[in-house]
Length: 98
Image (cartoon, rainbow, N blue to C red; front, side, top):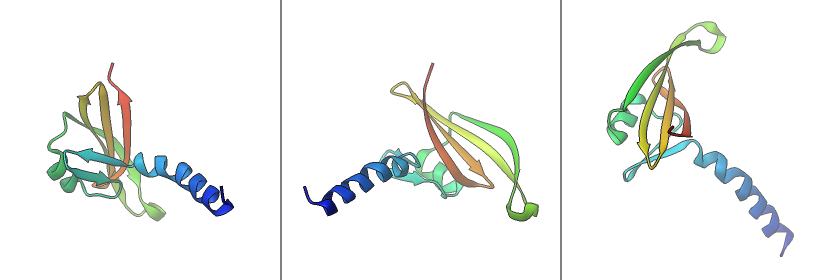
């Protein structure tokens, strides 16, 4: 195995799970961190539950953003929890439904 191939393989092994964690498939559509709430709802439909979590301050504390969690599922025993800050998708979590 060449050193260049080994470095490329190692890089892809480390980076791919990180990219996958911030993307969610809704049917044939994908939503990713940074997408707007209306885009997510258009692609995935309305969530099973919406929770207002609180507020966070933007850069330099000049703006306040609403923080919401949208819950999709359970699908195949898993919940998808999408966290929005200021109408932008910031985090996608997957948890086992109890």
